[in-house]
Length: 308
Figure (cartoon, rainbow, N blue to C red):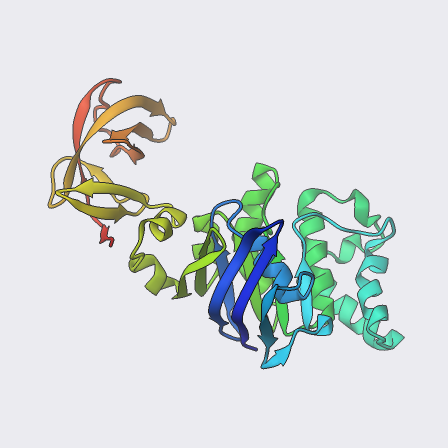
């Protein structure tokens, strides 16, 4: 189900939080909204969910005005009743007027797909971070809404839980027969989870489309930086270099790097320093002799994109 925004503008205390003349999110796909903190990502979700009203403009879901019954929202915070997981999953279904048998069928299906069947009788407000994320997803899945919104789904988790869900979330999202829209400030998450990307900076959409198109045509500095690229000047040209594309030694596009730190990561060695005023990190090839702090070495980029 497509989601479209037309001339949407959100203001608060005379400050523009969101200014989107036009945006189309294609139905049936997973879309990541990527941008730095404070860029308006959560505001965009809340407007699409109908929780915030734009000052002007409109949001259409499947060509119709926003209707809460067609949206499932997975909040960043764990928002649960102080009751069992079963009660929390059932509440939304009760509010939508579903019969007991249908509620049971949906809860059993969602709990099985999200792997939380063993938690159904536990107090939802006493779950661990990873358990809570799974239950939040199961609660959304129960609703069978055509649009699912996820606000920073992996934020605030401990490292083992984060690593596990980073691997599992694409499969978990596949359980939803819906358009999925998630927000993140982490470009690695956006590229891992999504088919389409929207880059939002200072409340404005600077790029949108299939992730391969956006990632290989960043066009402007703000989009490149949101994608985690290093943006440097070379021979009067502004170029964006993806993470991992810098290598020691000369090449077609080379730079001089002033080394600030040599970092022993046991399995690998990383050097941190500056190309001009731009801070960069470079992983050294296995077995190579590391330079010393204060050295100046040559680097080259094996992938880069010219910017406007």
